[in-house]
Length: 153
Image (cartoon, rainbow, N blue to C red; front, side):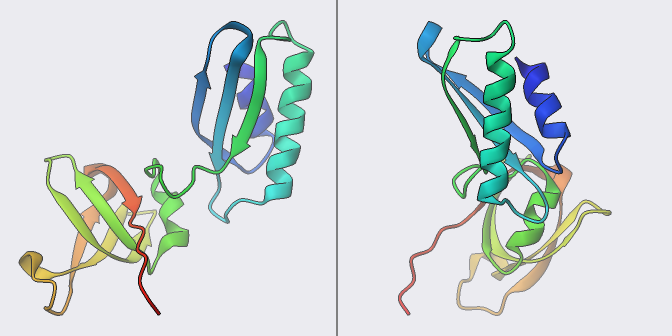
């Protein structure tokens, strides 16, 4: 089934972020999380979903899936690729680094070519201080998520 999914996605400018199959026998649900640098388009995701359904029904996998969901990863899923962060410049990120340390700060810049993130962080955890720039190599990031804040306006 993975080869069918890859062939459908590769025909677009989207990239597979994660595939999840859950459930048993005829109650299986396939979740395909895709993204692209320019962001997602709901109509394009619907078209990808229809094409996946058509191809799977024409294959020997017909009848195995109850449901197919094609979606963007959503704010609650960690980033897998540095290019996903481009559209989040200006937002607050939470990072867990490979050494186990955690970091939170405003994403100031992303360099896909250098594989680096520029994060504005409070020095030594001092929230009231002026933020300083921290250059983080994406290869040193174990997990990165946008921090959701519910601030009053």
